[in-house]
Length: 477
Ligand code: UN1
Image 1 (cartoon, rainbow, N blue to C red):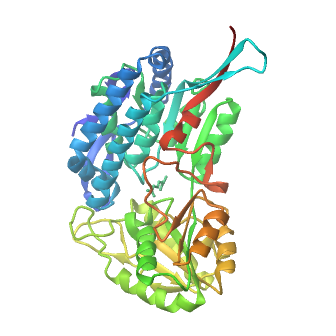
Image 2: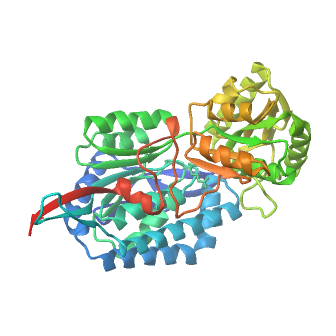
Image 3: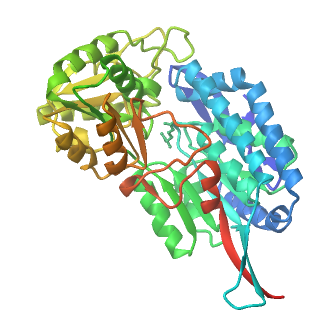
C-alpha cells in the first residue's frame, strides 16, 4: 500500500507508516499513514515559523481564493470523503457526508471572513490623537484534533487559523488520519505557499509532546479529553502561549411533564445514540419529571428497539460501531459500573455480532440512576445514557447544573416559561430547546463552561478571538 505522507515545508515526507483500520470491519485497512518523528515535527514548526511573515502579510484575495477553492473541492467530493470518513471512524454514511458538507461550509464561511477583516478607529481621550484598534495573526498555531469528528473539527480550526493569517502545524488524531490527510492535500493543491500548513501525523507522546515543548508555537487549539487538555494548558503556560481547549461533556436533557413526547424521545435518541454517542455534545443524563417518566422511558425503549446497529456503510444502519477496542472496553466497563452502582439496565448494552468483525455495541439505557453515580458524573463517550427521575422543574434545573462539565444542555417542554428560565439559568455554553444537545451549526459560536472548555469560543466570527491578537495604535495627527 502507498503511504500517505506528512506535509512538511511543502514536501510530502515519511517512509514508514501505521495502518488506519475500519472499525466496522477490522479486515479492511483504510490506508497507511506516515508517523512523524520528533525531528520532523521540529522541522514542521520551523517551516511554519519561516512562512509566517509572508503569509501574515498575504493579500486577502489570495487567502480567500485558497479557502474558497478548498470548500468547493470538499463539497464536490462529499460522497467520496464521506465514505472515507465512515470507513475510518465508523459513523454512518449519512453522518459522514453530513460532516463533510459541514467542513465545506466552514471553509466557505472563513473564505468570506477574509474579506471582512476590520478594526475600529476612535478618537483619543487627548485631542489631536487618533486611536486604531486592529487584529493581527498570532503566529504559528498548533492544532490538535480528536477522532470523533475527523473532518469537521480540523476544518473549524484550520480554516480560521489560515483566514486570519496564521501558519499551522496540524496533528490529527492517530485513529483517523485519512480525512485530515485529504484536506491538507486539497489545501496544498489549492495553492498554499510552502510551510503555511504542515501535517504531522503520529502519536501524542511524540508529535503532540514536541509541539507542547516548542517555544515557537504561539497558540494551541485543542479538542479532546480533559486529561490531555490539562497537559496542553500546563505546557502552554510554561511557554507564555495562548491556548484554547474543548474537552468533555456530561450533557443533561430535561424532559418535563408538559413535553411533546415524540419531540422529547427523538431529541434524546439522537443526542444519546447517534454517532454512537461519541460526541462531546451527546446527552448522557436524561432528567425526567415524575408525571412523564414512565411514558417517556417506555417510548424511548421502543425507539431504541428500532435503531439498527451495523456496518457504517450499509444504508439500513442508524448507528455504526464504536471507534476501537479501547473505547469499546471503556463503554462496557461503564455499563458494569452502572449495574454495580444500582442503576437498572433497562435496555441494551450487549456486544453484537455482525457479518464483519467490528466493535458493535447495542445502545444502553439505564433507569433509576442518581446524579451522584459515576455513570452520571463521568464522560463515557459511548451510546450509554442514564435516566434520572425528579419531582419538578426546580429539582431538574439544579441537577442539570450539578456537574463538573458545562458544554451543552437541553430541555424538552411546551412551556415558554420553563424554556425561557432554562435558557437563562443553565450553566452550559450552549442550550437547546426541544432539540438534541448535539448537532451544532457551523457559523455560530461553539464552546462550553467549567471543565468542558477553556478560552474563547470556536466557529463563526467569534473564532477571531483566539486566532488573532488585538493591537491598539495611537497617532498624533
Ligand atoms: C456537534 O455536536 O455537532 O467533539 C459537534 C465533539 C464536539 C463537536 C460536536 N467538539 O463532539
